[in-house]
Amino acid sequence: MRNHFLWVLALLTLPVTAAERKFDFSEVRENQTPPGFRSTLTGQGKPGDWRVIMDEVPSLLQPLTPGAQGVAKKAVLAQLAQDATEEHFPLLIYEGETVDDFTLTTRFKTVKGVMEQMAGIAFRIRNESNYYVVRASSLGNTFRFYKVLNGERGPVIGPELPIPSGVWHELTVECKGNQIRCLLDGKELITATDKVNPFTSGKIGFWTKSDSVSYFADTRIVYTPHEAPAQALVRQTLKKYPRLLGLQVFVPGPDPKTSRLVASKSTNEVGRAGGKVEPDVIAQGTIYYGKEKDSVTVVMPLRDRNGDPVAAVRVIMKSFAGQTEQNATVRALPIIREMQGRVASLQDLIQ
Image (cartoon, rainbow, N blue to C red; front, side, top):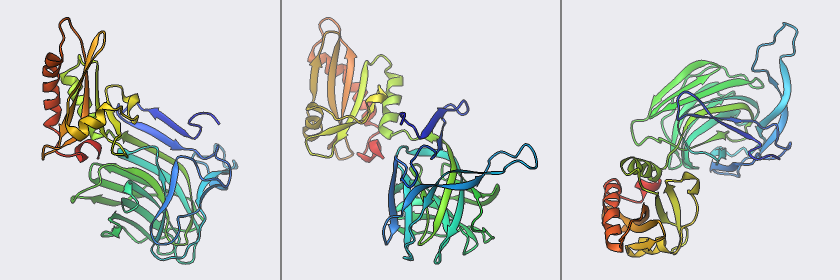
């Protein structure tokens, strides 16, 4: 299979910062869970059984002639488990992207279920216990939106209306800041504003409830990619100090003597492990200096509001004749102070 065989990622012209992703399951083997997703759940019971199957789906395009075929068999995503546990909410989370503002459109079909016949989209997912969801119920004849906070369902809003089972419907979700709009079959039915600790970014996922068997197809999201706070800090600092050869931020890794790169002038480096220096800077608050032929490097700590080191910043600068450790540190210090003024805790870098 070719690289990125499943997902199409293309930069759009408007707005410049937006991107588009389409989920095409046609190259996933039948009865397989699509790669790049994680099956999990909120509540009780076992995770869902998410697979790609073939089903007849109406064309997105209008037939050119009245007698033309309006449906075709295509690969769709299906949740097939029928766990009748009441508080059972299977989730299939796309792990490849964290998004900020977005517009997502998908088609869904509720197929069967004795306890429930629901299909929905979870979004701004932080984890299995914290996210928003919009869902349609064919048994309850409801279209609802609510927030899941620490595993507890918040206030539920949305109208009652028929949502026939066995029929493909279109669902659209739009998020801008803390404002949320939800459309069903082209009609705007829900508007909400989360004014108390809103989720401003997160992952997206497919959602069902209890023993619902539901299908999804033709999912498309236009979004603003999430920029980690540390990366935004690096970008802003480089605007003020454009002559820096390099600027990197490291935070503690999974083990006490490791670190990981969370922001860099060269963004393709993000995610790699740090060396021996960075963990020591974070643990001890020490300063390191290194010199090469044409450059010097200073690694200094970033501290939280209590003065404790929470990250290490590597500043890479051009060298000059007579360059010493002392004057290299003096050159790096204003840069670190500029960054320090925007950091009160580790969460300010990685949230």
